[in-house]
Image (cartoon, rainbow, N blue to C red; front, side, top):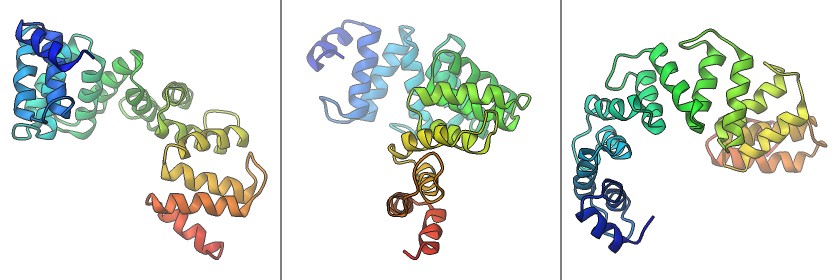
Length: 243
């Protein structure tokens, strides 16, 4: 992103991209004092110029109540505008709104539709949530092979939740051939990103020797990290091991 002086100059001259980026600077307090009202002011100017990220960002302000009163219905309107024009981040948020019934009637089919659109454009969270749709049959037929495909897409982009789910699938042979080494590998990737469930399951791998040599002390290390991150199961596992 350009320096703040350049952004201010370009935004003042009516450049929608600069206006949106300047709004983002005010939203985050990046190079300027954080000011949600100013952020919205520049987002609105950019939106008037047809900037899709600005429409999405205004939707986020309504969704989280930043600079104005929280209003899911208004958020959905702004998300829809950008989503219908192919903006993947807005497509993801629209899917999330349909999943949770925020600003719209809860609808698994609409949720699936928008997650799929965003996932096909490479949005990792959408890929993860689309995989869940396939895994549980929400808004589509249950299909673990498709679930694995999208979990893998998201996991390869570093999504810790997808990495954890892949670990579970490989550990249990769900949608894939059971493979403890692959389970361990994916648990480790997610655990390194502070995913408590993965840290706990990684500890179990060390206790049972799943995909790695048994090592109780290392298991305790991961159980403690998981417990610190809120895993009750890890706390119970520590008690069973006498810690």
